[in-house]
Image (cartoon, rainbow, N blue to C red; front, side):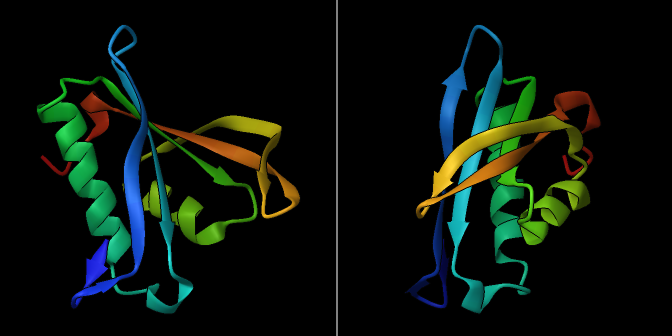
Amino acid sequence: MFYKDTLVGNISFNSINHQLKRVDMGYWFSAEYQGRGIVTRSVAMLIEIAFTELNMEKVRICAATENQPSRKLCERLGFVLEGCITRAENLNGRVVDHAVYGLHRSAWSQA
């Protein structure tokens, strides 16, 4: 992700499962640039690609349970909290739990 010619983060489909018609999305973003809508617009763009170009039925995002900005972003975009996974990731030497969010194509209202 770029903002005014500055690299401020990255975003990708971490996995694409054609059999399940599901993508898992992930991103990293510099805290210095939060609050400008950059991540929200980037995630919305990838959701659109998943549903229209890749013909997926579901987008999933996992966020550390204490990562409130990411969790609020998911909720703003219409994702539903599907559950939590304990001890899901080693994040810079600290083991964190994940909140798992899902968005089905039928619920995507941005199209």
